[in-house]
Length: 122
Ligand SMILES: [Cu+2]
Image (cartoon, rainbow, N blue to C red; front, side, top):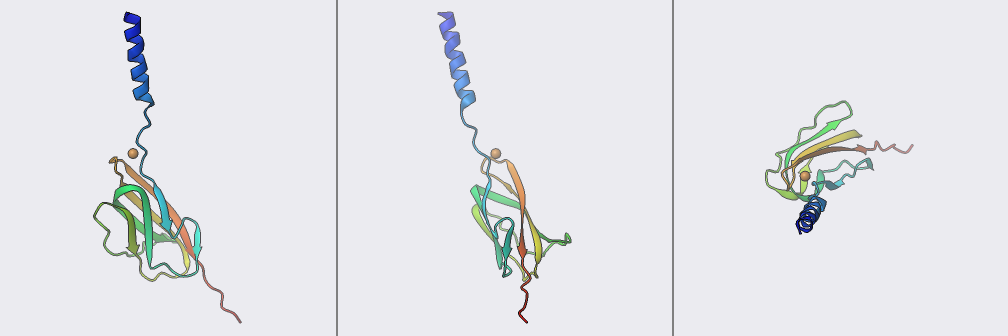
């Protein structure tokens, strides 16, 4: 009898351990996409997350590490963000972001895109 109860406890314990942990929030999409080559400078940068998040940091840097001036950051909890960007010249840009996910874990990442210099025809 004691062994049965012990077995039951162990079974329940293992079942609890086996429950899938709530997945961390991930960046599920961005526009421009990572490593994309744009022919026109984007007017805004869009981020789509797998859950609602609070964006706590967002920056865009050019190839020389110069930070591009952006407008005010959204302060509300959202799943999708669109941050307007000023007119930026051709080049490579790195977007860095940090957010607090639905499970209160801090997640962060970066991606880059390029604005191609269009070669004029002769
Ligand atoms: Cu998490």
